[in-house]
Length: 292
Image (cartoon, rainbow, N blue to C red; front, side, top):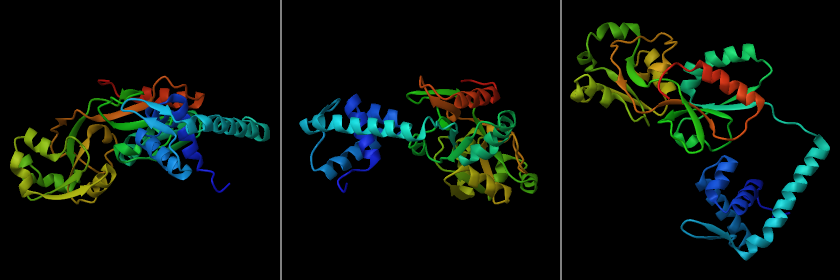
């Protein structure tokens, strides 16, 4: 038993050997191609032999890989049969939904509350992600992603036209009579977004104003908005996150468009559960009209 590798390494090997593709194996297991490649490398190091011959655009199994594959597949089949025999059919009826903390609190929460009132029998697991690399690392039935809506193997619905505008507390807004009044103020930045304060300032004709402002930089919009509510500065926020501003006001109703936005996503052409389909249709019906 001491030579038995971790289960997720074995899953990576079986899927890669069956499809002869690290990319296809990653899509099947809901992980990245790089994660599959790393697991295979670790497995080969553990076993002391290569399992695949790697070519620039293809894979083949080594003789050792070919000889071992039937044993691995038989082991998975026996595990599946044993689980079914002992525990019977016990499908997980929960739906996993992954998105950023800001979108959870500002867009998803009221909609999920209404969904739960209408469908209390559906258990929804909400998991958090911040960076684009956080999406797809583990399986999720539905995601709310940020980007341009073009992800391979994903069906995507836009949450609406994407634009950003400044927000702050009412006392601070009273002092901001024009964009020029931002000089000397603190601009709250969310890292990782294609459009931010430089684009907005250029849009209003104040391109060089940022050199006269202080800055606070966060890696997520939730913290940016929390700082804005504390009066720490002025945040630049997507309009779709302001349905419930929670004490924030818009000092200048001047928007700058963004080529990136928020999207409702799920794996394309992959059958989901009845519960997952029910939540998907509900959220799709909640999306504001706009370009998709």
